[in-house]
Length: 332
Length: 306
Image 1 (cartoon, chains in turn brown, red):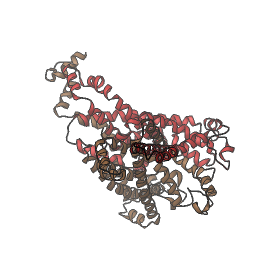
Image 2 (cartoon, chains in turn brown, blue; image 1 turned 90 degrees about the horizontal axis):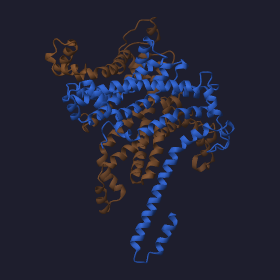
Image 3 (tube, one colour; image 1 turned 180 degrees about the vertical axis):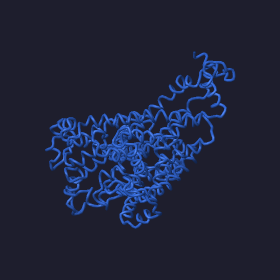
Image 4 (cartoon, chains in turn cyan, red; image 1 turned 45 degrees about the vertical axis):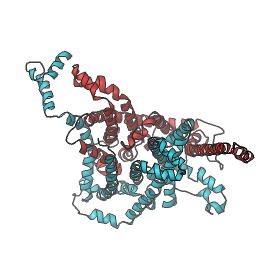
């Protein structure tokens, strides 16, 4: 039977009287119109369209409607409200507070994790084999810790409830750490600054390993003669980094920067677990969207407008990411 | 160690071998400080994980003692026993139920996503067609859309479809969201299989499916395993969708939702919380160690080559 199939496949024109003419015809139709790639793409494309693209369109629609619980149940009709959701959002002080928290958090967490990641990457490149495996495994474990586990763990480490950080700070002399009663200090609930300091430390702890191994992979592509020549000419490590390493790794850094901005601007798991919804001073944009959409009574229209604003901010960064990926030949 | 080397340097300063010895001791001091710094970084990085695991084995009077201990002085399995029996969890079930849910969701997600992504990856790597570039750019953009931007629409759609509170609903969303990255990664693996092999097989009379199962699939298998592990970890860690979809249906909770629920209900039961957290974390770490070599390329989508 397979022999027969092969023949029909190789000679589609001769398959007229064979037992499987429909199949053979289909095959030649696909071949003639070059449909194979489209057929292969179809299932994946359908999945993405249904779960990402269509919801995106719906979000745009909701953001111009008064969509809420009565509209979902059908008690009240859905109405188009123009830009009302957007103006209401811009008038809400909590929106600006959340935006501020999101922006400031990313502005601190991104550069710090890039610097620490770079230092660790450069260090890994110079360590002996055993030591390098030891350090990179340690870093890998921090990276591998699921965000929820890590968030609960850091919440506890910074809590007055037997947490090590408060204990450590309470043992320090006052001239060093200020006169706060650190033994009873609750980082998560005292305000936006302590909460986001805690979240920053957590995010940096989880993000620096990825940056370090990516920088390390980049460093491995730089020919060692370059560094040696510079060293012979009397250049110090600082100069070598800025004159040789950084220019060569610039594309990698650009990608790392854009990815980090997107990831850190997005954080929800960590801010939800640590800051929670109890205190709107500690909202970031993700928490604010969640609150608008899922705290009773839900206002899906407002949430949609917010999600759209959020997506547009991210789109600017994403365009940069796509462009730099394309420039590096990612599409070939 | 460092002190003796540097102290001995001036003593031999007058001899002929001065530059060589000095250079050697400077080099030695540098190596020692570099390694010392490396150990410091590793210890600081490991400390939280160490605390999590050690607290999971501590009896409660040690957890709440005024001076924290690094290692439990009377290690106990009591915390693990509590989360396994489900007694402390407010009656929503043993931790194994949530382990099972998480593994089930992640596995089915990976099976669906890998199959669909492999087909798409073959299309992108093996064929030139008109919309190829647009498709690739679309993947890059879609990969960056966060769940928060879609969650309201997804929630309302799945409510209509009656898929909220079920693991099936989660699997559908997770699989679709895993597709862009999986296609990106698999595309590179498919491209490394020499086209000549397939052509030779075709000349020998092999048909499409036969070429796929006998030649392409075995050669892409290592890549498929790596991308599957990635997909698994992503689904295993996912939080916001599970949080909104599963709602109050405790029996369908995945591990991260169980952990936050537990944390919200019993905020002070740190021993059992850390035990549950350890049970949740260990599999993720094992999977990460499996794919450590491929961790870089996948995420930067071709930025780092070689």
